[in-house]
Amino acid sequence: MIIETFAVECSVAGGPADGVRIFAMDTAFGSSRPP
Amino acid sequence: MLASWTRERTSNLAKIERGCVPGWPLEYWRQLGPPMIQPSGQPVPLPALGGLRGPDRLPGLETGRGPDHAALAGGIRQDCAALLSYAWGRFSTAIGPLFADFDQGRRAPRLPGPPYHFMTRVIAVDGPLGGMQEGSTVTAEYDVPDQAWCFEQNASGAMPFAVLMEIALQPCGWLAMYAGSVLGSPADLVFRNLDGTGPSRVRYRPALGPCAPAPNCGTSPRPAE
Image (tube, rainbow over all chains, first blue to last red):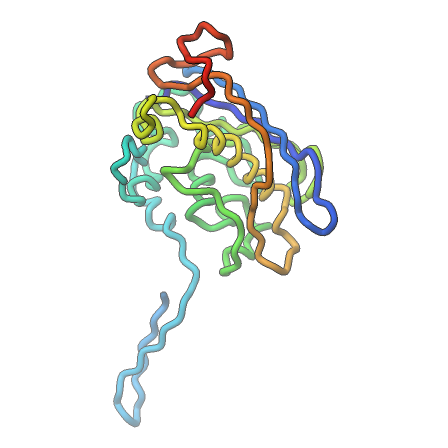
């Protein structure tokens, strides 16, 4: 049984740079219960 | 493994030639199902975790989120089947033909497979596929089961911090692939998580259900383990 759903939002906050494929990622959490 | 059998006319000897060809376990396991969730520390055979027959949702789940709830990326709906392809299948069945080169034996970063797979669906994506564009965003969901190895194996019964972290990091890996981080590179690339911060304000335990980040939701003020 599913008790909850986590929602995650990720965004590319920076990069790539200097020939190295570095990404900065921002993430945020939210959640909801099944109806 | 591909094997061919030839018979030489002169010597009448059988000759077997062997060669390696790409293969993906999900091509076989997807015929099984419905998929299981590993409930404890006792390993469940991977084919049972990777079955894709049956409903999009796992048995008994009433999340109200059907297959159409998942977003399209590369022409492919980013549901359970597509996300398992990032772990055990062809990249072209995960994110579309733009990544078909990686079906020919080239290596690229993959999501972990179950039981360490913590993405159920992608519900929104913003930004060009393969565009390497700053500001690209993904929203992913993970349906938390009430019985899973990560609760059973933790003495406190709480979701381990390592799992919380994966729930956040796996969509980041998905987004890096979607943005095209591996496209155009002559070398096979891998991911390395360099740094980050992640405060945890509540311990998440299935018996408690949802908890707001407030002091009176039945949790200890200690961070999650």
